[in-house]
Image (cartoon, rainbow, N blue to C red):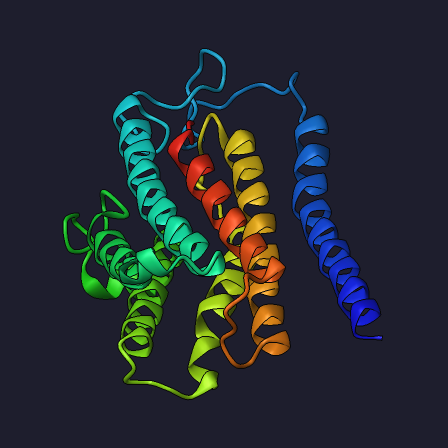
Length: 257
């Protein structure tokens, strides 16, 4: 009976993940296929010129400097996520010689949180021209989402640090980490880089990463429910969680616009 429940739960997880991926990707293909390529381009439209709808060279979003900046940020995040995945893999495999690695995840999360809060957007506070109010309460959803990711990484990284140091022993404190993966993954389905020549490609990247993040977070939650007390044997749910985190890190490392 227990084995049947685990199998049924696995099916539900992957059905939900596939549905989320389809919801995120299919409208993008429909929009891409339904574009009117014969419509005249208006030079007054932001991000376009009169030569064929390309992004204006001096515009940051989609420019050579803007793309290089965005790709570097994603690659740095990729190294942090890879460290998290390796740490979680060592825990899932119950490697006693890698006990120190339990602190890698909170350390990487705290570093990435600080990095995103400061350097996520070229024009945002504290390195850009936008004020604190304009950055966190303005009308640019991309900037607000980036800062939200940074805040979540700082908050959950702090919880995980205290939890792994034995300062937070209640099992409820293990929930924010997988919930962050799920919520962050869902947010990726609606994350946009605005007017960008590779907007469609970026959306596909985000849909794939969002699917893996939602699946990873769900598997981590199921692992906590099925094994509320730490066991000495490896868990397939935790192995799935760690493997997907590694895949997300690898995708971030090869991310390109």
